Image (cartoon, rainbow, N blue to C red; front, side):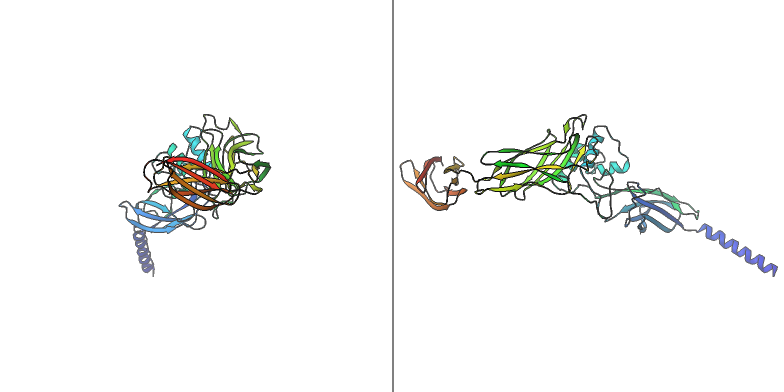
Length: 409
C-alpha cells in the first residue's frame, strides 16, 4: 500500500509540472471614459493581436467596463478597442479648452489631446479649433476622424498562472475634450428668457440687442435663435469683435451665433449684459399689424470669465411689432444692361391690374404684359432675349398712376 501511494504521488507531481509548463493565462482590465473609474464604458469591443498582428481573441466589456481574455498563451500582445456607443457631447467648453491649449493656458493629457485632434493630423492646431467651433458647432458637419479614440494597450504574458492586469484603457470621443459621456446623453436645460419691451418696426432698418441678466465678465457664448420670418428680414448680425460668427437660415428662421474671446487675456473685456445685435427690417409684403417674438433653441450656453458654463442666466430677447406700411407706387428694374430677362420689382399700395409696355427709341411697341399685382411688393419678369441690342423705354400703368424708366439691351 505504501509503494502505491508513493507511485501515485509521483504521477501527480509530474502532471503538475507538465500543466504548469503548458498553462494558459488570463488578461483582465477595464475601459473608462477619460480614465474616470466613475464612468466605465460597457459594450466596448476589444481585439487581442499577437506580435505578428494576428487576431487571437475578441471580447467585450460588461456594465462595469471590465473585460477578460481567457486561455492566452505566453507572448507579447496588443489590444485594440472599438464601439458603436453614442459619442460624448461636444459644446462651447470643448472649443474653449482647445483655445486655451493653443494660447498656452492649458495642458492636455493623452485622451484630451486625442479628443482635440479632430482632423487626425497628430497635432492640435487652430485648424482643429475652427473645425469644432465653426464646422461642427455652427454648421453641424461631422468630424473628419473616427468618432471614438482609445488607448492601445501592449501586454506581455509569461508562464505565470496569475491573471495579467493591464493598465486601464482610456477612451474618448472626438471633440469631447471636457470628457462628459453619459449613457443616455446629456440633458440640456432650456435657458430662461426675458422678453424686452416691444420695438415697433416700420420701413426702416432697426438694430435689436440680445443681452442677459449676467452683468459680470464673460469669455464666450453659443446661442441658437428663431425669429419670425413672416414679419422680419435679418440684414446684419454683429458681435463683440472679429471672433464672432453667425449662420443664418432665412427659410427656417434659425440664427446661430457663436463667440469665444480670442484676445490675449480672454474673459477680461466683455460683459454679459450685451451679447450681440441683430439688424432687421419689416418684410415688404407685411400688410397688417403683427407682433412677433424671438425664441431660443435648446443647447446654448454662456461662459463666465473662467470659461465655465453660467447656469443661472437669463437671455433677453426682442419682441417686435410690425405695422402696416404706407406703401407708395414704385418700380425698380434690373439688371441694366440686360441680356435675356428684365426683372421689374413693383411696389403697390393696393391690388390692381398693371400694364407693362416696352418701346424702342422710335416709339414702336415691342413688348406688352398685362398682369394683376397685389398690395405690397412683387417681382415681374420680361423676356428680352429676342430684342435687338439698343435702348428701350418701359411704362407701367397701375390704375390711374404711371411709372416709366429706361434700360439697355
